[in-house]
Image 1 (cartoon, rainbow over the protein chains, first blue to last red):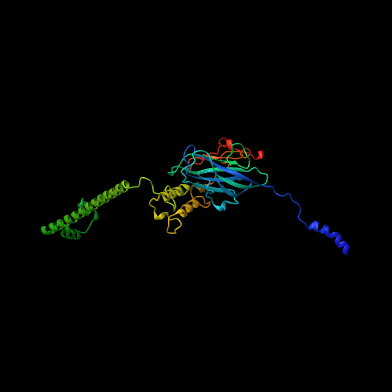
Image 2: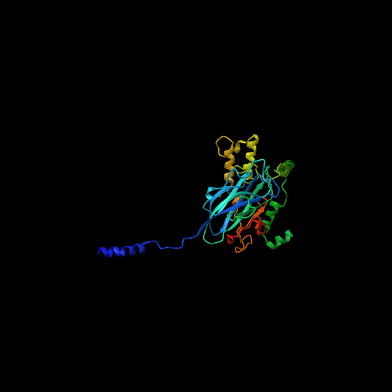
Length: 152
Length: 194
């Protein structure tokens, strides 16, 4: 009897064990948020970013490239983490305010599944040191893909 | 005519005589009574006339006063309709965003005169914490106002999902603008290149 039990024990364990399901693929990506103030000094900015489709979660926010917006990460709502929408913004009193295209923040995302993530950004405000609105372009690019000429 | 009626009525002669005796001659009214009645009537009409005049003058005065009041209100109206200024709206543009944080930070850095209403966190001191409070409020996902407006979806912007990898938007603050992939093309990446 004992031998029989010992014999079937591995089978019972195998039957009771978890079924090997294909684990959902997950990867991390860094998305650079770029603002081009078109020659005007960018003293304050605020944008909204959202991932349109796919299982995308924000996992972190980092500061911009060395310069006026590198001293600290931009302001954001911590509630945005683990979600797919965030409002970012920052200001700078630095005398060397950027006037050309600059990376103002880097978003760390977790992307689950194979769906191609799609991102949308919207400029909420961009202003010069006097608080006057200035035209600017906001764009994002995938920093996890190294490219020549990238400022990292 | 009365005679014809009398004849038609065929009244007894005695009754006819009695009626003629009763109503045939006018009663004598003293001239004083006529004068008194005439005077009372004139007083009455004069009173009514005065009342009508008072009503007319009163209405005219009320109309004039209303016109003057309307003119005064019109001349003293604010040139720009007042908008409710949110707490932290330092530049009073009706929006709470990062420009307000910049404005307060600049005033603090320049040691400008500070308004007590800029004590956002209510700790009795206007300092960097208030700047941070404004900045944090402006990026809050629960905020109301411009930034709370729904972000346009790719479909709203007319971008096919099959073609969009990364999109960008730009423009002057507050202006929703169509996303242009062409602008994003220099920095556009595709998941397929990974």
